[in-house]
Length: 184
Ligand SMILES: CC(C)(COP(=O)(O)OP(=O)(O)OC[C@H]1O[C@@H](n2cnc3c(N)ncnc32)[C@H](O)[C@@H]1OP(=O)(O)O)[C@@H](O)C(=O)NCCC(=O)NCCS
Image (cartoon, helix red, strand yellow):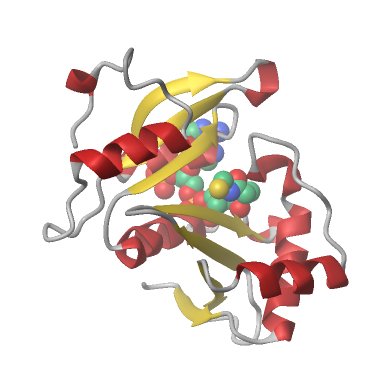
């Protein structure tokens, strides 16, 4: 990475910084309604989830001590799902794109996710880095694309079984899915 240093989250103060960035971005972060989290909620959530996730903060090289973004990579059955968010004042900085490249490397294999169709910045970045749209769902402002990325590790390619699990995770019916439109 050229602009950002990545720091694994292990300590309560880092969990708290992640909470602040998360709360600032709630409306963009998900396709379903996410709760505002208090300090206690977030620490409790971390206690329950820290074993199934890898989480990181990002600090610009030219702004030491300022943590501008987080990545949460949830480890699932043969694939990962990422969540990223930046402090609002840092939107448009190019950091988002660096973080997306970073999580594709860190995932080290297939990835699944969703994007809000009206989140133009993330849709643009995701297209550039090779996310494929498998389907769409939702209504109005909450219309979302269901996404798959094969990963960049040639030695950890997506098996048929894992792809079926990704379809299940995205709530896509395999019996009606057109497998010819995806590059597994
Ligand atoms: C999405 C997010 C991570 C992007 O980070 P960022 O640092 O602002 O993004 P970058 O500056 O790296 O890149 C933005 C890209 O989108 C493009 N873009 C921005 N607004 C756009 C628009 N309205 N239409 C098309 N492209 C747009 C930019 O031109 C840039 O692409 P380029 O480098 O090819 O020119 C950040 O806005 C954010 O944290 N949003 C809230 C949380 C979120 O949406 N998370 C993603 C869901 S998990």
